[in-house]
Length: 180
Image (cartoon, rainbow, N blue to C red; front, side):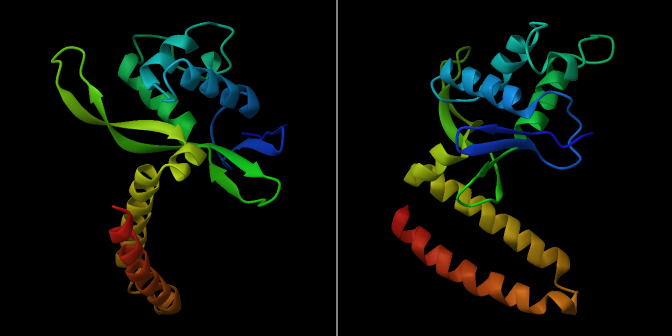
């Protein structure tokens, strides 16, 4: 897969390296932004699948539409894969960042009429601007760092990095207590 890059204002939109998507990344990003705009800022996966049924949708050709091979749940997983693999690169930072992250939010179940927690994708910059969303993302980052530490603790070459992870996590957890 070619790693296509596309500029959009002061950000650059691209797929992560080795992502198996043929769609233009800027067109996919704009499609996801339209889905968000039509769903109160939430990147609704079911809605994205339905909107992708349109042959003019930028992701239409990347989804499996043969129901003998894939059903709706499979297509939802394909859309989630696309969402997790689109990045933005701000010119002032020049480091790729995931365009969307998933955090838990309370939503009303239309069938049971009960409030339940559900993972929903939002723009990363929107999550970072929201103290609760930022705290959730930071908690996930800490879990990821701890998993990294546990997985690679036997590698003496990473001892310094693991020590930094340990000390930084303690500092971050102290700050998180003040946020939450």
